[in-house]
Length: 96
Image 1 (tube, one colour):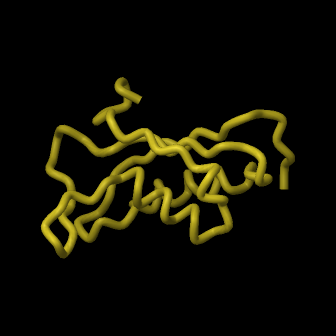
Image 2 (tube, helix red, strand yellow):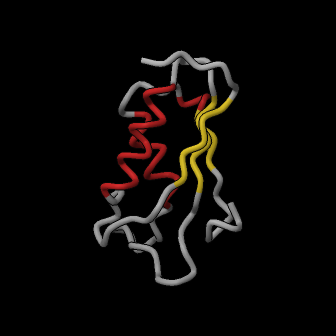
């Protein structure tokens, strides 16, 4: 595992499927971020969604946030919740 020499790891999202789960390419991006995570860096999860299609809806009828789903993925794989930063305002790569 590589040791980091930086303060943050940036992980762009890339969409959710109709069930609100990360696409395989998003999972690979998150796994790549985990390869560099040593416990001292912040992990910045980018993207709230896209303006090109509506977000998946949860069982309560609320939109599912891409960055929150990605953060949950990281939490289940040992990332300290205090080290996860969510970018929750942009709706495209330029906004990130």
